[in-house]
Image (cartoon, rainbow, N blue to C red; front, side, top):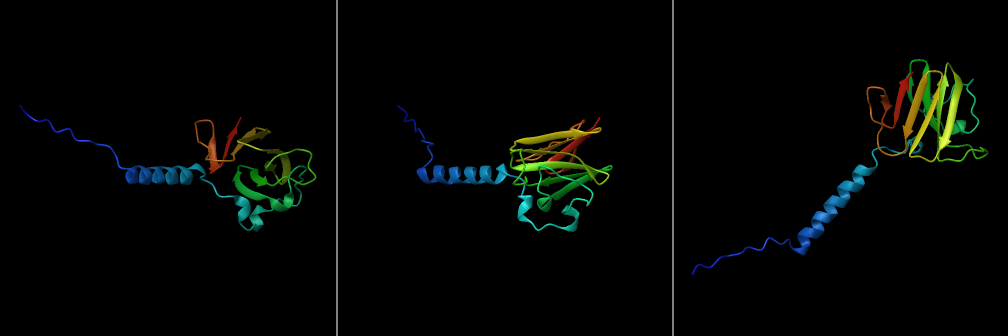
Length: 144
């Protein structure tokens, strides 16, 4: 009669804990790919043109995301006196005049004006597709 040796492939508790910690650390680190732009100092490029008007956005908090043709894309914190609620405002400035602005709580702010549409993603990155061009990690635009 032959003896059959069955090997137990169970993982020990230390291995399971270590693997779980590695998984959680990787998951948390990968969840947010973007920094908070308001944590950084403003530069001259972040300021709105003097002729641009805002209603819902606080002009002293604007950050320039990108330029596309004759459009500039900014984000800003909402004005404390603004009627619209939200955590963030997206502004499209055309030829130094604010064409449109919208504030929201996410996960996406989507606005459009005069042949251009923009989407700002609060978390993660905007995806580039055949229709959408990615201008910044959280911003994509398309023309129509």
